[in-house]
Length: 309
Ligand code: BDR
Ligand code: CA
Image (cartoon, rainbow, N blue to C red; front, side):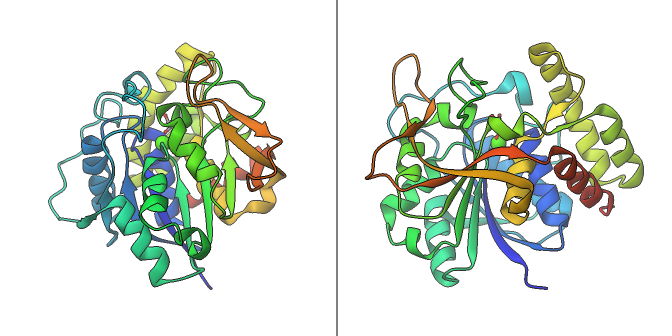
């Protein structure tokens, strides 16, 4: 079987941890690297968490540290109220003993990887898009050699979660998102329009802890904080599977209804971070996920983690 090669750009983060564990366990995915970014926590904490996750899954995956700050705007507060100060709710992972950290920035790592295997690397970004924008700045030719870019971010018709209008990843760095959405590469947006429809419950995660005590057990422990935050904000018993849904969109496009449109990001003011359809003929069209077979996505996530240990 030919595996899809994924670089995951991430701010771990509870649902980031779910996405990374899912990708590492799925037999059609080869995770070729994690690049880190601020968002849910600082870049320093995100990097430590990414290294700890690599150790937890027991795979040899490079981690490259990304930017500490957005491209233009002043840094926004981290999402501690959703993910906890350390990013994994109340759970403290052991500081990683083995060095999976490479001596390159995230942007340099992305540029090197996509050129080493032209047409082979999918970039799945589940945090603010600063590293991708910096990679494009460093080497615009990556847009021609990356296989695709799948972004968890934005919201076309579902309202925001960081502000009334903006989804958190885009709100953290709207200028970077604008750069990524206007570059000539194959971009798919997996925003709140679909990720809010994919919900897993406390029962789902308890079952994972029983069937896969190490990795399912870890996810069940960290998700408790996320459940409490989601209950308080949205009143639901369960959590939105934002980042795992983006990884699943990278390998199971047929589970999504996709419409093509140019997308622009409002960079400042009250609507900062909002993603809007654009009539501009100069902007490339991107694939926007508007519908999802949420049951199939939930099942695929749960079944894949169950095979863990
Ligand atoms: C996105 O923001 C972060 O809090 C999550 O990890 C996810 O990537 C959801 O809006
Ligand atoms: Ca994330």
